[in-house]
Image 1 (spheres, helix red, strand yellow):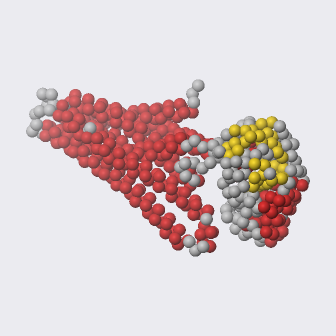
Image 2 (cartoon, one colour; image 1 turned 90 degrees about the horizontal axis):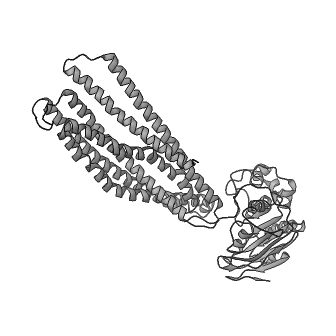
Image 3 (cartoon, one colour; image 1 turned 180 degrees about the horizontal axis):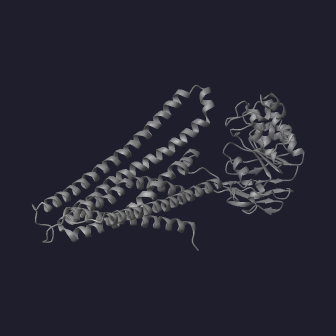
Length: 541
């Protein structure tokens, strides 16, 4: 059975063979041209119609082969890049920790901009390498048949080009790798600065941020220019040896046809047809080398990208349970229980919740409160222990359906560049009782366009407490059986914290299960039960 990967490789091979065929057609074209002009120089009659038809046929064949080659190679490149992007998105969608490559900016640069650097290499380098392996030897054999002198010139000039290309290529690969690394770092820097743009403006750090970003951009520009300088150097070396080789062939052919040279032709005089054929083949001998040189830096850039992809693949990170797909919620929750959970050196206390229960998780910063919440939500896999939903263990098969029953209120509110209503329901209808339960009714009444007011990615127009209420409404929107809140009152004043706590407790009073990780002792005291997680050890209180 043929896999998409095999099909992609087959398309690449076929595209390379078609490209090779297009180059070999030129040998026939050159032969026909040489014969025509040789007959003209000798005074013979040339059949114009047949010659024109032959040239048109050969040129048409070459154009068709080249077009088909590019089409096959283009489809193969699209498929390979799309497969890599899908792999990155699939893995990152299920990852429970940040990649070693960097943050969102670096991964976005890798999946979007950097993977596109593979396209020139797939379209040009591999076909050029195949042509270089076949076309120059064929031309060398043809030249050797007519003249050992021309073959000797080509044989001496040709190998020097790959040698110098390899020497320059080592530097090109290193420069390309540094450039690709800087692209990822600059993307991360841009994402971080854009996320904190409002805060930077408030503290007057705008000019400093702009200056640092300009410095990073200038450093990337210098590295890009270093890659270009290497490319120009290798092109100059290539053109030098190509020009010398073609010039020496032209000199020998010219003086041989004038009768000034009598050696180099296997003891027979060089005919005009053979001389013209050698002149036409000499540039074509170096053309595959030119193509390979032009694609050499594409290969260096592609190698740098694939090394980064390999580094990303080697990054072993915890993966969340399930497939991350939309799923039908499990049956209504009748009980949640954890038994002997251990993760990252922390032994967590057993948790038991029934409908209407509320539990506060306390502990110092870094003790593992958020991690416990993520474990219960199936966002990370525990190293030991079990999570029981209605008496059944949480598994890969039930994780998506389990999360469909959970409302999540994160510690830091996140918003999309849309209306307040869209930030709650993501396009679905939002019930009025959800807005009332989250305490958003009076907030919406004050906004200029009500729940259609655009928030922006920073929640413009909302205070910290109002932003928390929006995230609470988002968590309540799907009618969850379990509400998980991570530091829901952090950085809020006492009155706003009390009102957020009222909304949370109201959810539990209506039969929901409430799980809160908090430093707020006043909020923890209002919940039915509390557990504390000391560093590297957990005890129930």
